[in-house]
Length: 209
Image (cartoon, rainbow, N blue to C red; front, side, top):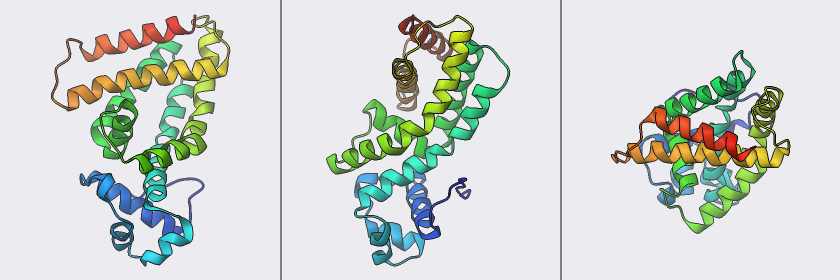
């Protein structure tokens, strides 16, 4: 497995626990059944060490998944900052999501949780939502805001409220992700990927005008 890297990396023992969780997710483990002892054994540290940094397995798992997904932020940031129109960049964002969904199981898991196609325990869901608000959403805000400024500058969108812009962006990304989930499950929606991209872009722009 490729080592996780981040500009503000956590303590080494925490990073080892994150990597342990991500390895298990990649191998198809049910996150609801992963125990703290499973994580620490794979990380090569004592079980008691985990509780020096976290109070529960839910905290470790939620943090690990979000930490891994935050690594995608750099690529999304490059897409938003490179040359191209607002529409072209939106298409590239969807293409990147499709690529990562196929190749990265942790991202797939996050999408499944967001779209309701993967059931997690109430305690893990609660911790995930809390951690997402603290870390996941905030880490994407600057990218979305930069992207939206271009849309406004090009006259493609009129809505300038950043909260409404973010809501519209997230809603359509999740809508597109649900199409990926259905295809992964072997379902064949009466909609091609290109039709799906065109639809979510149109709905996205319309919602902000």
